Amino acid sequence: MIELTTNQKVPLEIGGTCTVKKELGRGGQGIVYLVDLNGKDMALKWYTSIPEESFYKNLKANVSSQAPSDAFIWPQYLTKVHDGQFGYIMKLRPQGYYEFGDFLLAKQKFTSFYAMLNAAMKICDGFKNLHRLGFSYQDLNDGNFFIRPQDGDVLICDNDNVSPYGKNFGIKGKMRYMAPEIVMGGNPDKYSDRFSLSVILFLLFFGNHPFEGAKVAGCPCLTEKHEKQFYGTDPEYIFSPEGGNRPVKGIHKNVLARWKFFPELLRKTFSEQFSSDKIKNPQSRILETEWQKILAVLRDETAVCPNCKRDTFIDVATQNCCVNCGHKIDISRQIKLGKRNIYLVPKSKIYLDYDNNADGFVDVYAKDPSIYTLTNISTDEWTVETASGNVKKLAPKETMPVKAGMKISFGLRYDTDKGEITIS
Image 1 (cartoon, rainbow, N blue to C red):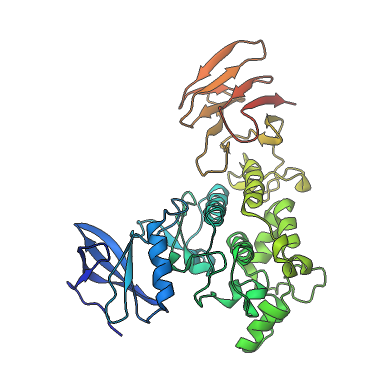
Image 2 (image 1 turned 60 degrees about the horizontal axis):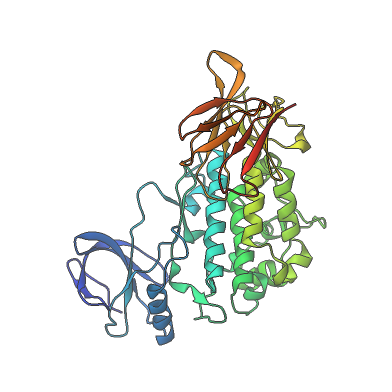
């Protein structure tokens, strides 16, 4: 095994060299180095084991293709092969992004529900685009994501295992993130990716694994045999009606504390996806686009409680009461946008599509708190038609009072381009 040294020049497959500056970290597949490439700091992943030639060819094809979205830290250049070893060049992770595991261990926390939902939306969008290009990720786990806690922006790393449908190079992933059919020896594909995605999202929202309840907690030693049982032959959702694998008080603190905070829509979706019938039927697993629709609804239901000033969800199941202090939230002002009801609660944000850029901000008029205002924080000009039929433009950064009967044309957005403000 060849390890690289400081100031060593590494030839690239396209010509030229990069210069090793220092080691950044190492894992099961290889070592990541900070390198200088034509005066720019980049990262070099150098494989310490010797992959098969087919793996090199697949990685070369990935380098030649475009990243599925800006979320992916995609391989950009290959090195030449030296004594069977090689590596690839990618962008460095920017400052301010933290490992997904840091959020699971509470070393990092999202600054808002919006940020958490944005992270979920960005992850779903990345894998939607990956699958549209005919690829499957194959090794989806908590180590693949770096997240910025302020706004939920996500970077997806370790993309060297991405392969076209039907191809696999022996990399299947971590067992607790695999779909059951992969645990039992099957080959990864977009359907197994979707199972792993649901596991990741459950962890993101609830902080515990969806199959690690009383049965796993009661296992004195989690051997490979037990892992195959809990994640392969006999996976049981922790909120399954059978109830044999429920979360344990004092052990699964996160999910027990958070479960009631999220709307019924999210809880119901997970319960359906992790039902025994869905687990056994890969093609019935929820699509990324369906997840995005659900997340869009949750963002529409996100608000800042006027009483305790903390994030909450507006959920009819809780009579629109704050999940933190119980204060009833006024939802009489809404924007009807296609099938969506966007609640106009002060300090809340409005998202018109599936990206992570808020388009509107709701507040109150400083001189009269009974008057709500809506600020255009998008990059598009809006057209506003008043209840009396007058038309005006609302440029980016401009604010208008919220009045019943107003119609706002946002442009080519989401289900419909025009929303009508209603006040009950």
